[in-house]
Length: 163
Ligand SMILES: [Zn+2]
Image 1 (cartoon, protein in one colour):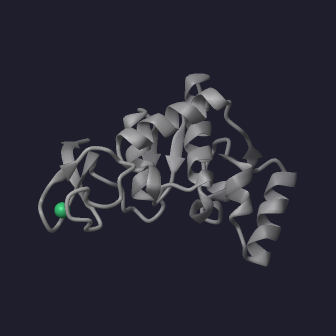
Image 2 (image 1 turned 90 degrees about the vertical axis):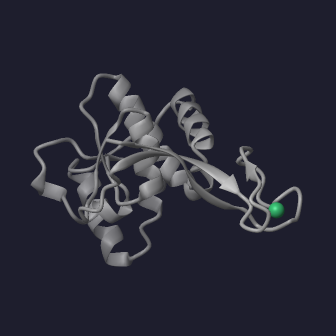
């Protein structure tokens, strides 16, 4: 399971199926990189999958609950959903990504994650939003500004469990 940064790192190194999604592939902008990806797909070194709506909904729900939803692109969500789907199909899935928001959501979905750079998160994190001016905490992740004083909200970990 690969996000864009991982696409060029592993190819033949892993004795495993490499899966990604169409949306992730579309994020590859560099011409040479696009050519490499195209060839990997043609050779079936890289498999393209898509998750059913049900898996996407599950990922969106947990990402919202964790307040990570704004940090994730559609492509990120598609990859998380595919990871979840393949895991539920009984595959031994490892999500390769350096993105902390993706790692956090994956861990809550009990998907194994591995980073490319070695910078993995060490804790499962639940976020909460707070106003840096008046200190009010806000649990509604859709709110961007403090309802009392209008200051843009910041976020901090609400709970942090070591992995
Ligand atoms: Zn405030």
